[in-house]
Image (cartoon, rainbow, N blue to C red; front, side, top):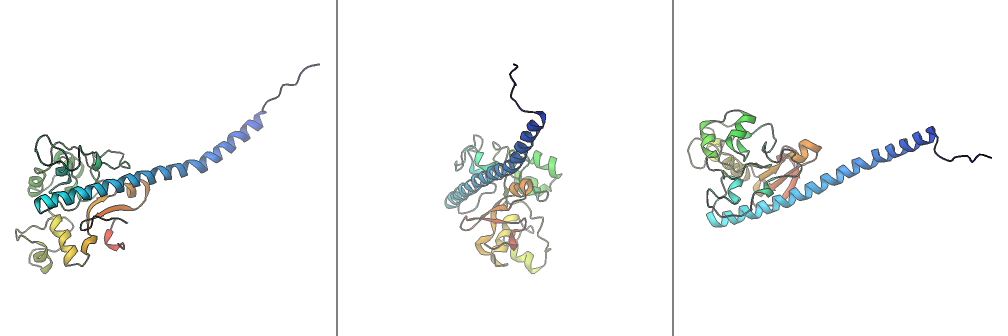
Length: 234
């Protein structure tokens, strides 16, 4: 008498594969979301550390740094080292690892990466903005964050010379409203106070449609917003 071999039939095997596929389809998005939440937590920690470094710089120089890269170790400049090698300037959600700057299709003039990289991505900057890039830390090649207190000319400031708004913002009277001046103008004359962001991360928004992470300039609180932070409650 022959023994009957036990095993899966083709239909049973297909059913098992289908069930596994369904379960994987339900689990994988959850894992992806969990990983992104972890990357966001790491980014928030980066922003907190950047905030502490900015405050230490402010205590030392009574002003904000021209660029975030100046907070990092430099063999060329010999400046104080507040952030180490610059790894804190990289967001884990940024698949470009900081080589393309903040990722915002606008405002290339506040990408804290070498000028050659900025102009390859965004096109040529004005001679004035080019001169500000000379103050960067040349040892730092990559940065995922937008630095919104840079001394480059603010391209979104729509008020022209002669207007009250321009006179209010142009604090040193040189005929140019920089990003730093525009942000301080928003803080004071537009009434946003300390909510104005000094550093922003767009990568969670662009890669996962999540909120933008912002570091407030006055108390270095991290808050979330859409691309336009002004419409978000603090």
